[in-house]
Length: 460
Image (tube, rainbow, N blue to C red):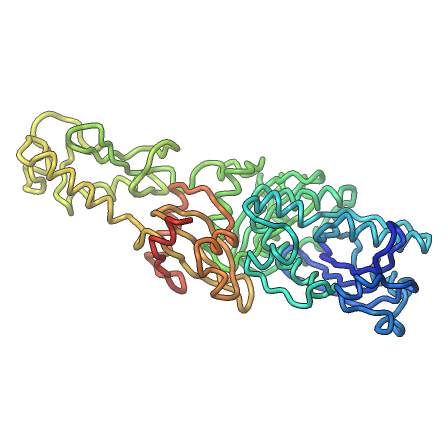
């Protein structure tokens, strides 16, 4: 759990500032679930330059509550949370100073969105809140007021959570909660999970990821883990301390995230998931005069026309391709023999096996077959459902390569390749990604495809 906050102060000497306004948003990693916003009477003068910057003056604060009157509410809304702020050292120091004046030791773990942005968005020109969110297409109003800046920081933090594929943010949260024992029946954990599509992360007490899974109903799937008696379920129950999740809004992004993050994080219990979703593939060997269609186990250093979940389906598809395109069995991994292939004898091969068909003509037909498994456009966005009302998702394909995914609320946020990249969470392309995306395109499980101008794409 997090609290994203922003504080406006009187200005003045170090550790003599007072709070004039505070906005706090309690966030469960997906959405805001509570908030507290208030002017605060600092009982001291406001520096003139601060009045000009924020628009807050002493007259506005005469009837506002003093800090000791809102202190209890601040303690309650931040309990068991990591404090998140843009330039967190400043906001956290000011809060601790105010509580210290009351004789209370206020301690919370904290995360700074400036530092996180520098790590996860290294290409940004500026990390000042206003310039940063505008470059990301995040709307911001009431600049230099606590509520406006805090809301912009909420949107920024949600974007950073998406881009944090190594889960350093989540791990820091788990470590902050270390020592709080999970109830034996896990009722609280289950109750806090959504009935929505996404990816979930099961952690041990020191924050390490034990298991990563995907489900269209996260709560139901985790409940099965925590009530099951399989070997995997018992391992999870023995070591589980905390569950985190990311809502994706649609199944495709959940599948892409799951396979990507299992490969990257290699959780202990995800033994099967460390390997490929589609372990068998058909590739073209161009080192021979007549190009060969080869069925084999997928390797990282080779490109495949298409991949399959098992060898039986892959072999059947290869046989179909050869028959439908009158290609030669001898120039594939299906038949190793001298002379004419079996298909030639049945008038289903044009004679490449005995050099009746030229290598040039044959190889052109093989290349044409390979193009049947291309994406429909070289550069495009695949638009799908978002995580909440008013939001959409995108899958970005550039040069027939999967680049990553992202979310947006307004069309101008994906108007240019630069804006697409700024909102995108990058992923490494692989044959699993291609197979997943093509399967969703084939079944038309998307809202729309948006072709992109090649000139603009190549200029990025």
